[in-house]
Image 1: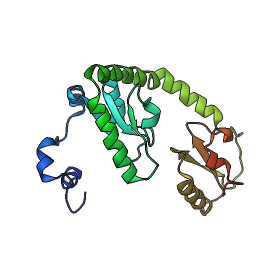
Image 2: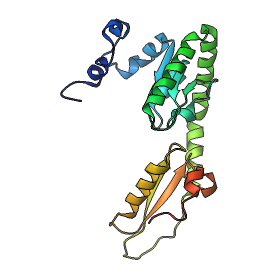
Image 3: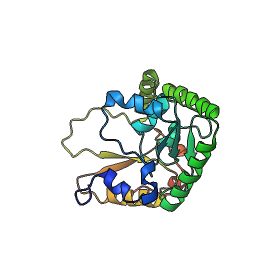
Image 4: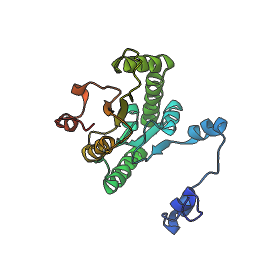
Length: 219
């Protein structure tokens, strides 16, 4: 909310007057009705500059739609570019580059033959059903838990060391991650240990190249 205006109202201020009639802003849609709206769409766009694992992307893929998203965050893990969707490639954090990448990728999606979009939508449905299957999720979580340090129970009354997980969502986050590590090191609540997690993995050799360049982690 900005000055009492809704997000939709703020977005509408950026649309040129002669193009406003081409946009339709829906009011709140009950969850049980979302599927019908997805099915009526030819292309679904998730233009987030960053998102972890958005339901919007999962739902659109499950409905068999061609999904266009940025290559930031979890969308790049869901979509196989050119096969089960389209990714707009840009440098992390560069808004202008993302805007242009989204424009070019949307043009590409619009120009695709309907049959090709349908084939991509079917691949999207198969992809999201595969990676978000209940058995797959449970197995992945169990594998991740195996990487966590296992410590014997202790009766000491000393303040325990606090492990803070820092999740890497892009290989272009060196500056922001460094700031995060320095913030962790400045904590006064007791001993802290940052745990770097990349693609659900804590192995050092699986980290992006910039992370391996740190001689030691603060804290």
